[in-house]
Image (cartoon, rainbow, N blue to C red; front, side, top):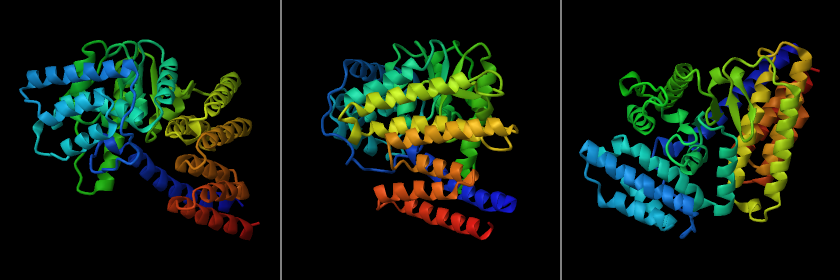
Length: 410
């Protein structure tokens, strides 16, 4: 049985890693590419909260100021984008955005003002695709989880966009960064412009995008470089609290992470063990949040299901990491973390039953614990709920192979 645990389980984990990596890249694709043009999820017209209208207007002003400073003449398309966005004309704004960022010859869109544009876009698109009331709830849940004056790494589009939009001013009350763009010099210059000397950041000369002809290798190199720069920023600001929302996992962070509302706290020193009371509070928080969300009839079909499910999945990942033998030597502690991870993955799927990452993560956890039938049931249930999803079908086949090998080694 020991051989099975170190062969079939590892093979399954490698398959899982490849699939989840691809999913993470897709989730954050708008941060690095503008080649997808699908407006079917965008509403024609959306009623924006006054805070968001004011935020868009402030970013338009900042874009104009940066363009004047850097000697760029703003095109009519950029002006039209902001006019459409402020008026809530969602599909029109997204159509303009798509056309703009396919104009690769425009140097303005390779400058720091691109950061100001994306701050706008990543907040606006959440309202364009979802119920505004539910989006504002998600945004306030982020903000309630982030203490004043902290530095926050927001990984997903809503995780970066909504806290940025709900700050009263840049850095007030939270300094928002995204770990996904730290190795690009124009983004570093943009956040240095925003935050000045209030926090310490590398200079544009100290960061660069890794060069590679292989796109998959280049993507991995970028993620690894972003992780190193995030660690440098963490070390450069020892007097600041840090918080984190995951997109692609940054391995160095795992020993430092603990649950904190909808996000995670990046503790100053490695956490030897997450206290039982903290785990219990985490479970109570999410049980109450799920009840609140499911009490809203709009939530059952809204895009915000994906936001909350991902947040819960990410915290489940902390527990799952600590449940691995190489990370926690004490058997009782591994069991405690395994149980916490199982519950958190279940809650993630309760929020969005066909979440690829939650299904994969939960099935992988059960496989590592040699609960092969449970892993099979998880995958099969999700595949039945989303029959057209080929990745889920592939997972079912993979788990079936693991279960079959387990039976031959009994």
